Image 1 (cartoon, rainbow, N blue to C red):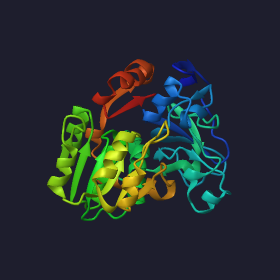
Image 2: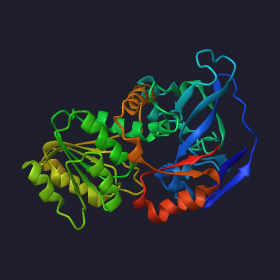
Image 3: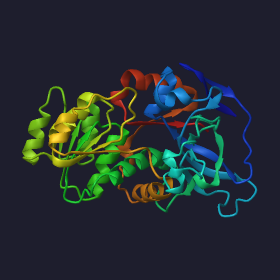
Image 4: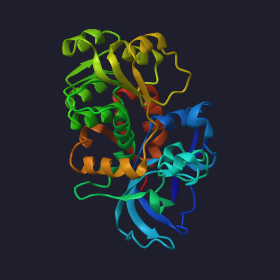
Length: 348
């Protein structure tokens, strides 16, 4: 089968590899779609920080995928061939402090399908073998193509759970990429009174408006402070930062109300410079969100996708074949990322 194999910085090859066979406790999934994540771009360009620096050469990339069970390994008795599933692409040790508290995303031995830390092949291939525990059957009403959004939307759902209740709250979302737009939809579903979205991209601001944001603002040419004051004089109740930008994060500190909350759900690639003085005098609660807890966040995300709580038509901007992954996917996002929300790859 053809697969996208990563060997190093800007060295991804579409090459022939053997079709995997499921081992004991594993499932062979025929992949319908695999989304391109921002972290895939860091890996592609050879970033030497964060998770991108821990990828294993020679591995098939891809961790945002869904498909159909083609075969089950020994010991798998509760998942039938033909079942449509979304995959939570994590493996964890089960014995460390975090695992004992059901926080596998913070496991000290965390690994991801797609090559983070261990040579676990990912979803940029027609077939992938994954553990049974990583497979979540799709609820009625959710198509297997749209289910490829489950992984990034679970990141958004977990971020919202990490914050205080959004019922009746005023919320500022910094960044309108896939995670920011997912957060926007999740807080609106949670009863937020008003939502403001800030992003540099006109296309992404337009998407935020389509998805129901109360106000959208260009943080450079627009007046974000005025937009907040138009809705709430003391500042917003909650800020979600998805940008990994110190400038944006400090905007959030300046615009959240006293004793408000900021949730960081960004993949920081450098040390942040945070205005701790202002955060301290206003007793701002700064929280962090690390991916998701599969057993809690994946079922909730799939239910919201099935119920239309996430607008998949707006979120999915492109479908491309595996052979065009580099030119129409990774390179396109590097140079024109602001024109896209989520590009899905068809590896079949």
